[in-house]
Image (tube, rainbow, N blue to C red; front, top):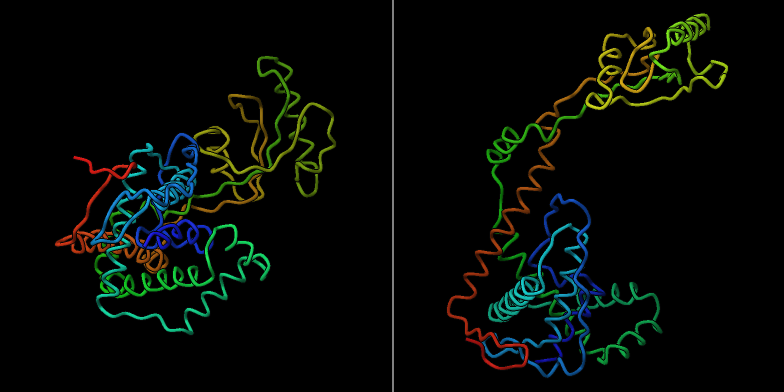
Length: 335
C-alpha cells in the first residue's frame, strides 16, 4: 500500500498529474508575487507514518509532504497564499479524494489497456530523455520499473473515472453562456488606441521665450514636406518619441490627439510636464467584442467552473459511507 502513495510525488514531478481532480488554481490579483512556503523534506521514515486511512488504504506522511510541496509551489505561480496548516488540509483532502476515486474506478471494473499504458510509459521515458536517465530516476527514487508502471496505470485509471464521472456529466447551456456574456460585457472590450509622434520640448514653460521657441520648432515641422517630426534636426532642446497615449496619465495630450485626423499636427500643447507638439499617427476606437467572438472562450471558462463544482459534489458522494480516519503526523489518532 505504502509504495503507491510514495509515488504520488514522483508522478507530480514527471507527469504533473497529481492535481488531476482539483484542476488549475484560479489566478487572483495580488500586490505582488506570493512566496512559496519553504519545501518540506520527505524522508524514508515518513513512509512509516500513516496520516490517514481510506477504507483501509494507507496515506503516508511522505505522500502528504510531496503534495504539500507541489501545492505550495503552485500557489506561488498563481499568486494564491496559504498557511502551512491550510496547505496540509487541502493536500490531505486531495489525497483522500483521489484514493476514493481510485477505489470507485476499481469497483466499477474500469480497466486501462496495455497499449495505453505502454504509450504513457513511452511518454514518461521520452520526458526523462534517455534510457540511462530513466534508470537513474528509478534508482534515485528507490522504486522498481514495475512500481512506476503501476503508478502510471493508477493515473490513467483516475483519468478514466474523472472523464466518466465529471467530464461527461458536465455541460454548459448556450443560454448560460449568453447570460454570462451580458453580465460581463466589460471584460470583452478592446481598449481604444491613440498613437502619436510626440515632440517633447525641454523648455521652462514659465519662460516667455519658451513658447516662441516651441512655435519655431512647429514651423520647422510644417515646412517639412512630410510634416514628420522625426525629420527634425535634433538641437538638444527636444526629443521625438512615438507613444500610445494613456487618457488618465496624459489627459492634455490625449484630448488634443482626439481632435486631430491621422497625419495631422497639433499646435503647441501645455501639459503638466512640459510643452509638446504631437502628430496623430493612428487612432483605433474602443471596440466591444461580439458574443460570437468570445463564445468559445467563455464557454470553456464556464465548463472549468462547472467541472470543479461537479468534482466537489462527487467528492461528497464518495465520502458518504466511506471509512476515513484522519491521524496526526506521528500516526496517532486525533480528536
